[in-house]
Image (tube, rainbow, N blue to C red; front, side):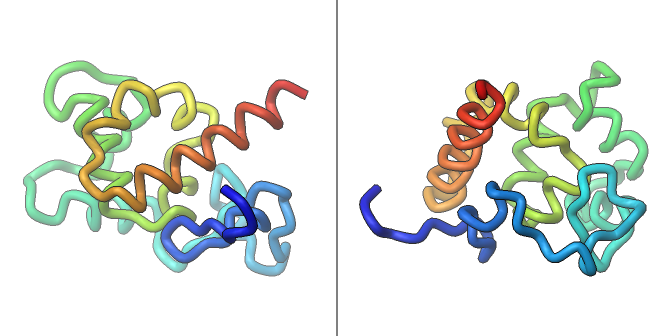
Length: 130
């Protein structure tokens, strides 16, 4: 990739993946340590504003705790394409995202998102292997 600085959804991945996050921004209610100005329910509703799906049903689909509609893959793709990187990580743990990424990667329509998450998942795999 050379000297190019990669970013996903406006987030500098070099800073994000090294863990250099300003702790004053961390919301104690965020399971993954990423702060957003929205609650989990608001983020989930933002993801499916055009569907009659409850926030709980979407969250259960995202985390693989349910079968049926919405499916896990559909919910994950929807969240990836609709939320910022930090918003996504505040509701989907990076280990789960990395595990599911190969299954949904080709269905992500926006090339920049696909390439950015390729980078994030690759860096996560390298750090998890250490």
